[in-house]
Each structure stands twice: as C-alpha cells, then as structure tokens.
Length: 164
Image (cartoon, rainbow, N blue to C red):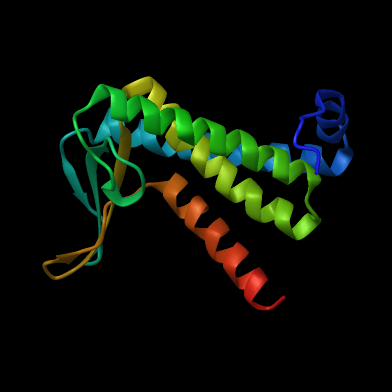
C-alpha cells in the first residue's frame, strides 16, 4: 500500500468536472455558515433572540470541539486540537477526490461545515454557536449551521454504510 501523496494526481482529481461541483458545494456550505455567523455576531451579539417556543438564537463562544467537548483554557491544547482538525480536513478532502458520487456529497457536507468552524477557530480563537434548541427548561447543546452540515454528513455516511 502506497501512502505517499502524489500531488500531480491530486491536481488532476481536483480539475475533474465532477470534483469541481463538489468543491463548489463545499464553498457554498462554508459561505452559508460564514454569513449566518457574521449576522449573529454583528446583529445579536449578547442578546437572545426568541424565534419560537423551541428555538432561540443565543451567541456563545465554543473553544472546544463539537458540543463544547474538550474545552479548556490551555493555548497549547487549543492549538493542538486545531492542528489535528486541519490534518483531518485535508485527509477528508483527499478521500473526497477519490470517492464515488454518493460519498462525495457526504464528504462535501462534512468538509464544508468543518472548514466553517476551522475558520472561526483561526480567526476568533473560538467557534460562535448560536442555535439553541429547547423544550421548556431542557436545552440541547448550542450549535451553528456548520455543525448541522457536519452532522448531516456523518448521518449520511452511517446510513449509507448501514444499507451497504
């Protein structure tokens, strides 16, 4: 098994027409996430917007990974996690280029969302989460649109493999 990366092969895969569509999908997901976060950061900042009886927009800053896991105040640990996330995104992008069409859609969702949160980790040193689902006093973890796309991609991958 050859684990060396052939950059010429990667360049050829990126320029394939079907891969171009999925790279465009990644960019669209990333931009949708960025626009939603900028709107919340600039317009609502510290205010809570009550959407309905089950959803609020409430900005919090997450220094951990999904659902606030691994949050702490250590810059070394934060940078290590950020570096590992970058490696995982690059690896997933490489897998996307070699995948079939169904997997490309799934990986596009995951990579688009992951890039949105990765950008925030680099820019803000935290990820802005703002969607607060709740029922009465029971609240789910606060999340953002990037988290939704990542979750949809993971669920899609699990469902695909379950029926394989």
